Image (cartoon, rainbow, N blue to C red; front, side, top):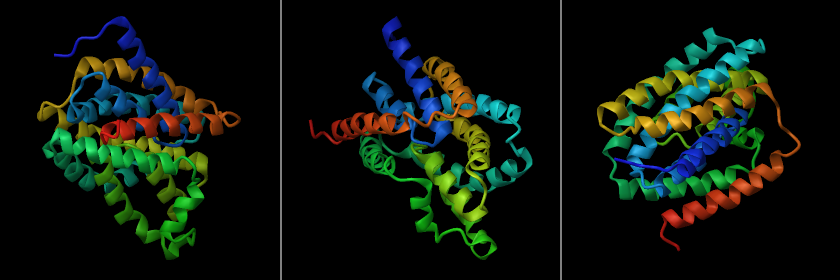
Length: 253
């Protein structure tokens, strides 16, 4: 259905690499992938499903990298992931039933929010959760994971930011541990999400594998190497690019 030349495939691969690095280091990489897929002619709902293939491979290789570094706590991560599953199932079912035109508008609004979130740190999100008060607010983590699961199942874009904020402030874990938990949680909940998109015919496997190759490289790199010096400039460039994409989806130009 979709045919691409070598230049388009190269664009998909390098988009995947960039998204993989960003997703593992913080979150928001899908804010680049979805608009690129849509602008290449893929239907928005299919783009949403296809992106999950890349996310699955990205987080698999990132998990291996975190495990190699001795940071991963797979048992705890699996327990956390279980609480996202009810939300993921509902969110994914909702995503495949939303029309492409409405999904584009929802995506545009989400992209604008993600642009704003690039200027915030995990601590800023934590204020919305009530701060780090240990066990007194620890119970909030579980309903928060259900809601995060719904959002991740529905659109995925920027879900890593919410997961990091929830785990950092409600578990009191270090950012290194939070990142490791995040990639394993997303790895696990992406499996049923992919199944739902697949059964509804909303995945382009060829494009998904091209993206997955890039995301896998980016996921491994992002988990292994901490790139701090240039992060500010990367985020500024992302804000401009993603902002323009959001305006385009809204029909501003």
